Length: 80
Image (cartoon, rainbow, N blue to C red):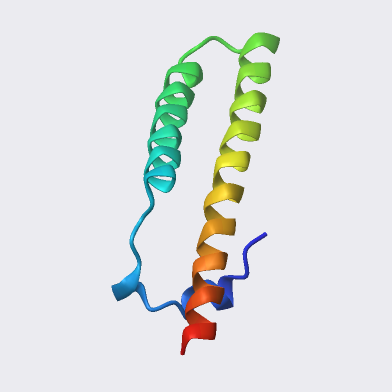
């Protein structure tokens, strides 16, 4: 998990999102849209399984973004 203190100290004026990070943010948008549609389904084991799968996917994408942010923050702290 990313270190929130380290990320909060980043100089955000120099941050540029890499294409991979933009793609991950788009993936989160799609996952959120899927969640909204799944929430409309009637309660069932299938709905629960789909929501659990979404949680896993969202977690993986967020972990990747948090790791990238932590690396950027660490890189900035060594440059200054």
